[in-house]
Length: 128
Image: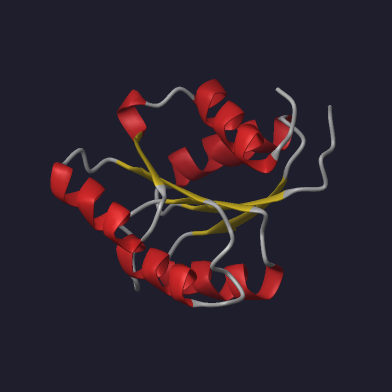
């Protein structure tokens, strides 16, 4: 198993999806951090400074768009690349994400895990 010394924060409140993502990225050589709500996601992001964040929108405590805005506005976390991975397949959600910054938006049901890993590796400059 390759080791990249790269941390990925997975922010997902559905335990099945969160575990699936964590296992896949761990098998690909990433260190995994997880959060099941927006409040915890912000705490982990600021304390651990992950190399990448995969962020759901529909989250307890603080919803994902607010988390994304807070990450974007915080000088410590503003440079962390984020992929928003959500079930919300609406132009409005996409537009809200783009209004915050240049973040990628993917629909869970239309996203292949291998492609997601390739995207993350590419954004981190890791050969695929």
